[in-house]
Length: 230
Image 1 (cartoon, rainbow, N blue to C red):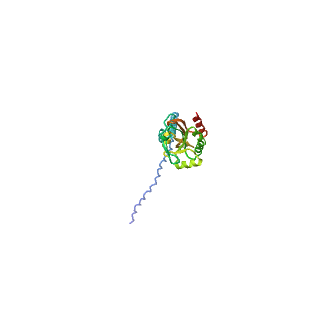
Image 2 (cartoon, rainbow, N blue to C red):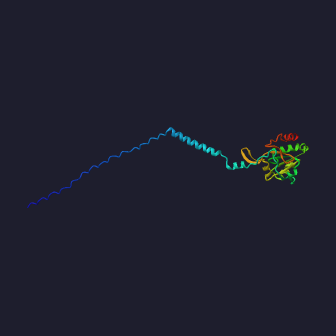
Image 3 (cartoon, rainbow, N blue to C red):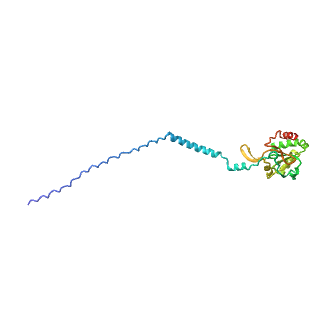
């Protein structure tokens, strides 16, 4: 008997590879540059005014002087005037003796305030009084120099220049303030407190007969001699 042929096996069909679906490329977004805002001319002017106002306010605050300085100026002693009663005093001279204003009643005297012993201006002024001392004495007038230097300093100063009159020591500065010669001074832009060179002529009753403020040394004693001779 003839053998029956077995049916041929069907091969599975190969699936064709499906072409990959290409995704559309995303378009690059270009960022839109925002146009600069237009500033109006008016707003610019306002901004300029504000900045200039700020600058001017800063300048004004810088120019203002500290409050301490104002209080100092308010408390500044007032210079005595002609006709005022001479303040009483009791001060030591170069011999360590007390000289009082009470002991000088009935006598005329010159009281000259000077800043410091043995400095150029003060030395010249004191030597001018020394050179004219005999003429001043002949008019019945006594002379006293006064500063805030110590008694020891006055001793050296008097001996060095052979001054024939007394130098009074006002170390605490109370008499300088009483006569109104303790002032705020300025030297090369530096402010400080000190004695303003001033001379007073006091009469027999203890009253101020003449005031010589802010003395210029040259010719000062000659001016006093002229006033005493009147």
